[in-house]
Structure formats: C-alpha cells, structure tokens
Length: 286
Image (tube, rainbow, N blue to C red; front, top):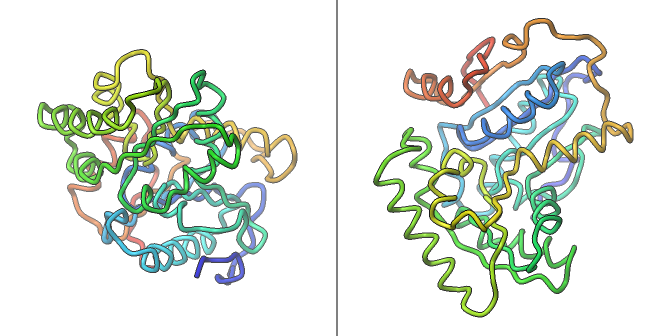
C-alpha cells in the first residue's frame, strides 16, 4: 500500500517564516540542500538524515514506506512549510504531492522533466539504487511525459556506501563507477545515449568520476537543480510562501539532525555542506 497524505497528523502549523524540511536516508540529500540554500538564500532549512537505517536502496518497499512516513511526520512536527523527499528511493515509493496541506516534492518528476528538456536523441540513462531501478519510477514518469523516449537503467548499489564513507575522490571509486557505467552502455548498442539522470541524491558527490566515465558528450542531470526550478515555479504560482524577512547570516539557516549521532557522520556532513555551516546538530528520535 502506498502512503497517502492522511497517514500523518500535523501537530504544529507552518507559516511563511517556517523552514523548508528536507530528508534523506543519509547524507546524500545534502547535495540537494546545498542547491536549495543557494537558490533560496532567505529561507531556513531543517535537514533530517536517517543515518541509523541507511541505505534505503536494499530495503523492501513496505519498509521504505514506513521510514518515509516517520521522516515526514518528524519534519512536519518541526513546522516545515515545504517537505522535500531528497531521496530517490523514498520518492519512488511515495504517492501524492502534499501532506495535510503541506506541499511535498520528490526527485522523480523534476529530474525526468529536466532530462527530456536537454536530451536530443531521447535516449536517457538512469543510475539509481536497486529499489529505485526496480520500481521503474523514472521509466514510468519519462514514458508518461514522452512516450517515444528510450530509457536505460542501471542499479549502482555501491555508490551510496562510497559517499557515506567519504570516498568521493578515490581510485577505487573511479574503478567502481567505470564498471557500472560500462554495464549501462552495454545496454545501449543501437541508439546514442546523450543524457544521464543521477537518480540518487548521493550521486552528485561522485559527479566528477561519473562524468569521466561517460564522457563530456553526455549531459548529467542532478536532482537539486531540477527541484529548485520546480520550487521557483510553484513559488510564483503561490503554492508556498517565501520568507518575507531577509536573513543576514546565511550560515545560521540550517538545522541538521540525524537518527544516529556520531563524530564521523557529523564531520562528514560538515565537509559535504561546506562552504555552508549548519547552525545546529541534533539527534532525531523518530
């Protein structure tokens, strides 16, 4: 059964000065958070990393839905005015675009729309976790938007542990990336793939290695950029309200929380967030 917006009670009411809530299975969603903070400098953010239960990509759909429910409820209780599912795996198992009146954004639709806009050959690749690829969420969305598109998918289960370990630039990482990319291109013998969706928010941290493996002719689509465009459009349409006040100290706008507090994760989070500096770290009890 898919989650619906009525599954979670909201204990506090959000307003225009409330933060934008973002969650991911771990630290990968920081790639989305950084782009959002750059594009919406007057907004405050609360980020939840479910580091105690990562990775999501190897879990069952039922378990992923349960985790998503708990994470969204936690963010709603912090008066978030917008909820961002900065996890492609969780996005693949969530139905609906709001939660008790709070707008909910996932990664699938923005990434798919962005890929179709830049692809000339309409042959699009998708890299993701096993759960995301098995759900075929990107295939369904891309086909819905453009029936003639060709979609080539490749599960990359080792990418998330590499990022969570902090091995973004490492010879071993380059070898693993090349192995997965080679498998993807082996599926593409007849038509020219020209666009590749990084279907996990951890993957932008491996962008350099991925770009080297696919070559400069292939356009990489990152979730954060595509999501920011959707948020800007909906802000103009009045789906959510911007903070009317100007933040004079952008480094104080981020509250970072995780379900497993450790020096390793906190230090890695600071490295991935840089040059942004979180105002507060805390332990989340879901």
